Amino acid sequence: MRFSSTLIAPAAAAVVCTFALAGPFRPAAAAPTSGAPITVGVILSITGPYAPLGEPERNAFVLAEKEINEHGGVNGRPIKFLIENDEGKADTAAQLATSLIGQNVALLIGGSLTPTSAAIARVTNDKKVFQIYMTPTKQLWETRGGVLKYLFEATPANELEAVKLLTYARTKLKMKKMALMHDDAPYGTQGSAIVKDEAARQDVNIVADEPFPITATDVTAQLGRVKANGADTIFIWTASPVAALAVRQIRQLGLKLNIVGSTGIVSNTFLTVTGKDGEGVLADMDLNISHPNKVQADFLAAYEAAYKGRPANFASFAWDAAHLAALTLAKANGKSGGDSLAAALISLKPYGGTTGTYRYSESDHNGLRPDDIHMAIDRNAVWETF
Image (cartoon, rainbow, N blue to C red):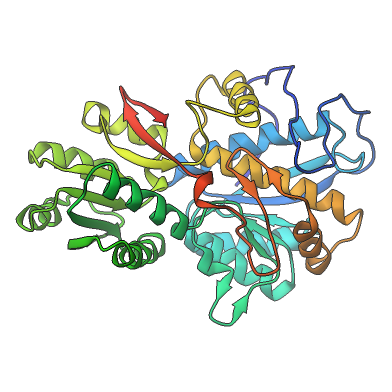
């Protein structure tokens, strides 16, 4: 399914670019774009169980297209994000990637999930097409066989999240006995392995490790084992709707636990579903909503003007991916192909986006740091960062 690249609500006219750390964009108004657009294929999970990720991502790409073109596009040419919906299905994502490459897109961005990103990457790697994806699984580009040359990540890796969350829980929450719950999909299983490794490094005692089906409708059995093992803090590592279910059942069972989620839970849907039960739930967030810098403040203002609500964390990833793509294309100056675009992105100066400051290199296709991540808390059904 293809989505139109027109805004569903008008964006603020005074949106400004703040790319202080990397060009070619400038705050001043630029000459109108001209010529044929440079088309970038975008594959997102806009419908289905993962719509809370894909919808804000789609919104951010639509807004980014307008903002980039208002400030000169890519070396004077307009950019067009051709957005496709994989419905959260890996096989559909692979088919869409093949189709978009056949339409001669300049590069691909996607997906919203680890399995869909991996499916797209199998196609782009085979075709030597440049790709940016928006999930925290760095094992997609950092493989046992080496770094995948054409694949780059626009989201802090699980490893960075694990350091941030465990350090906070250990030092601020005084965590002594930790329980871990995670989904049985790649995001959850890989994330849980990373959390366990980091827990060992920080000498944290994990007393329960409870996987759950990604389509689970009841996790009381897992929570019963968490209670029996005397955990004082529970980590929930998933991007599925089960996170909200788990929080509600923790409250229903009367468990006295600190609840810490991965960035995958930080959505407006989570807030709506958990309601009062979500009060005090902690997670990590990259878009500093409560204390934004200028780049983040401008993005927040533009998104809220366009869509009448706060952007989710996932919108921040998409906004940065869109601008990283535009910067890469501008740096390549008309050259196409994965080799040219990968070299162009690596050669960019550090880019200060809404998620953090990206410093890519040949060996680091993530480029972010733990201090790009902020802690967040659900207060009165609003995510606040601190």
